[in-house]
Length: 125
Image (tube, rainbow, N blue to C red; front, side, top):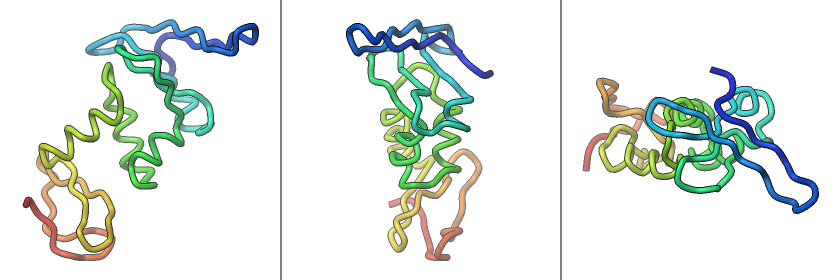
């Protein structure tokens, strides 16, 4: 997957023209090249809003952790990235280490008992 849909900047009115394409569960704009190589360029627009996300937005949302941001980008296919990240946190797929504040993959068979960044004990509340 490189690009789903298209996005063009309309200089006349200063807005983007969004054309969503079909993803697994919805219609989105998704540009893998921009996410990986041009973090300041638009790379994702969810199905139900015209919010435009850059790779930098994903990284910022994920506490500066590029590995989690990449997983989030790969996983979104209709929803906003913040909604999916919140869902992962609510279902303990990802937990936040109480000592260092880093996001840690926890659920889905990836249960860890110690934070890989600071070695603090982690777990469900």
